[in-house]
Length: 249
Image 1 (cartoon, rainbow, N blue to C red):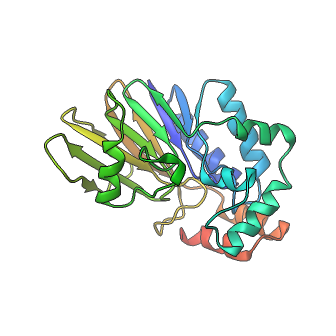
Image 2 (cartoon, rainbow, N blue to C red):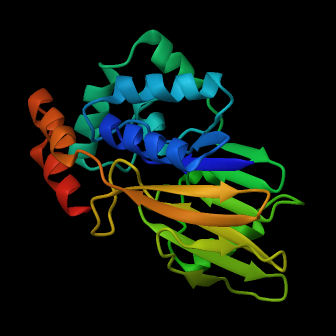
């Protein structure tokens, strides 16, 4: 089973479609979308429709904090992010809202767990961006889970922890390089952001999980950044959301 993990799309249909095309070209059996379909970008309805279509075909789908912000009152958001959530709410149909409302925070497939933020208190939207938060995340895995895959951080990272170790180790993956997952360790993989990377690289990010080979391969794929940015400007969302796409910030 080869699973393409895509997360933090943020209303960027151009980035999502580029990742899907790339994944299908490489060859995958299933998709996993780890939330934040909406927010910041100008095509939330199109992204939600694509997510719903993949869900109907058996994709793993979980909810992110930007879905929460649209379904309820945004908490901890900047004024610009709140403006985006309010605008997005008006773009979604009743069926879109119903689909998002029905999503769980955590999904599991065999020895793998999927969530938007962390396995540790997933409803609190904790960033797994340090060895400390990674250790807490890994410690929260249910029995039999050896790998957790997450988003939320908008960067591609990999953490690992052996049973005998109190702390987690960190690894910065190289796109395109396959990483074997030792059974002597448990792992936390951050798939990066498709629609709004924040690591200085504008290319959309996604992650290939090969469950048979027990390996991960992180990927980056170019997409039409200018088209995504122009959409944002046309609908009147803050220009900042458009500008940072080109810089990966």
